[in-house]
Image (cartoon, rainbow, N blue to C red; front, side):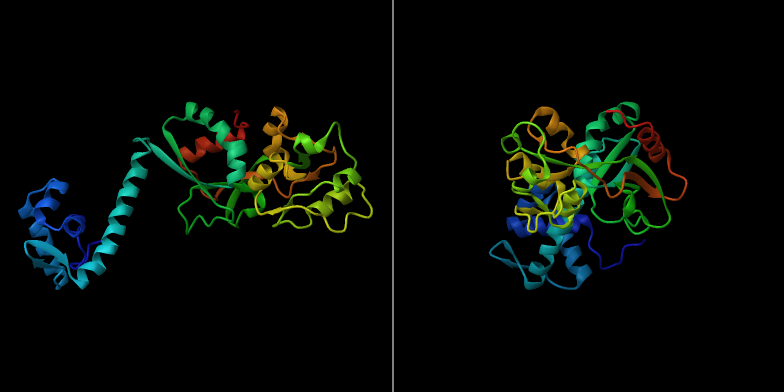
Length: 296
């Protein structure tokens, strides 16, 4: 796409911002690694392009006009975005391919990221760009090549490859758990950490555990995400219902204890979700690795 005649160049915006900050073309030139005459030409060219004066010259100082003040704010934001984009691309280190993945953050932290060193070993030419996404991904409208989320978040026109099922188990810090497993009545006497997005989770667990009637008003703090619930349980704030995938490490290191053998099935397996078209080589490598079990 051709640049419009009135659209400033990056060099002009850089000169504008530097002159606005430093007050003289000479100081701006030193910062930009240019000559003062080159900076002055950029400012004059920008003013001619826009048809408005951006600076007033007062006592050998450059002072922004009203139009200049309006433009310099946007210029700083534009240059900052260009710099951030360049740094993001440079971070890939010249790798042959970049895969942009939408992920559920807690699952990515607990299951995917600990395994990625193995993928990097077998596919060093592929760089991964992971972004947290809690909702369904529109691959036609968004920047993502694939998603690793719950299978029930898949939109029509996608291919779903299940990766890991889960069970929801009841855990608490050892100070609350005591020794051994607890019956439902003992669990009910503990503070019960609530998940605000699934308000009936404890009711479902007590029903599965055979507690009739179930506790009428479970008491305990309320959190929106599993990551926060896990941190609260480790801090001793109460008993929590969490996916076994997320608490495996805490159970192994003793920071959490299992309170009951009763577990609930997870709502949907975690899965690789990708558009229903022939995948590129990098995505095909990732899919094949995931289908082998993604060894950690």
